[in-house]
Structures are given as structure tokens and as C-alpha cells.
Length: 148
Figure 1 (cartoon, one colour):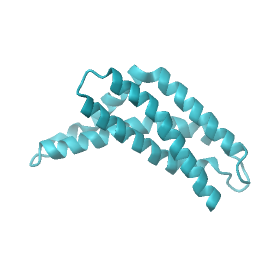
Figure 2: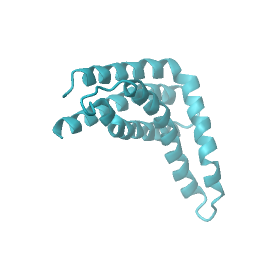
Figure 3: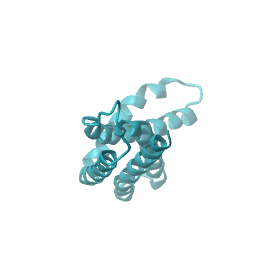
Figure 4: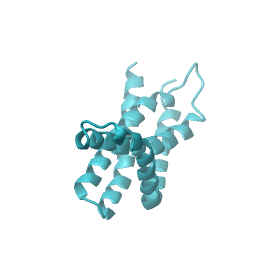
């Protein structure tokens, strides 16, 4: 149980750090208000830590069988879900504060979050690729020498 929690924490930290570099770059090159870009970046890093922690159990052996496909799936899922979740949280909070009486703002959360995620990948894809490959390799090495 202790090893399970330790692996989950290491996974959460690894993917939060892997997300921190690309979102920091996006904030740096952003032409929009720095406060808005920083809020989306912070939400994305927190989401990456949460997804990394949640998917961290995939690095542990199940019934004596070491992970295989999970070593590729985890970085890919965290890489895709973290910026989308960060943008969604930001847009939902914006819809709540801007239009307290209207529900129309919520209809645009998913399409706008997808557009923001695509913009994120179009700007920072080399950094995303490098950091998530590094995090995935580090976690795969941890899984290979982890508890059996």
C-alpha cells in the first residue's frame, strides 16, 4: 500500500513538472493578458498532477504482470487531458462570473477548451513532446524496478 501511494505521488509530480515547462512557454509568448494565460497554466499544471496521481497506479504490476501498454498510454492521456481540463476549468469559472443569470456560456466551454488545447499544442509541441517523453521514460524506469 505504501509503495502504491509513493508511485502515485511520483507520477503526479513527474507529470506536473512535465506540464509546467510547456505552459510556462505558452504564458511567455502569449499575446493575451498574462493573468488569463497564467490562470489557464496553473489549472493545467494542477490537472496534470491530478491525472498523473490518478493514473499512477498503472505503473504497478497487476497479478505479477508488469505494465506494458500503460507505459505509453499514461503520458499520452495526461498530455492530452491536462491542458483540456485546465482550459475547461478556466472557461467554466469565467462563465460563472461573467453571466451569473444565463446558462448560454456553458454551451461554449467544450468547443473553446478544444480550441485552446489545439492552440497550446500548436505553439508548444516540441516542448510538450520532450518533457512528456522524459516523464514517461522516468516513470517507465520506475515501473521496471518497482515492487513485484
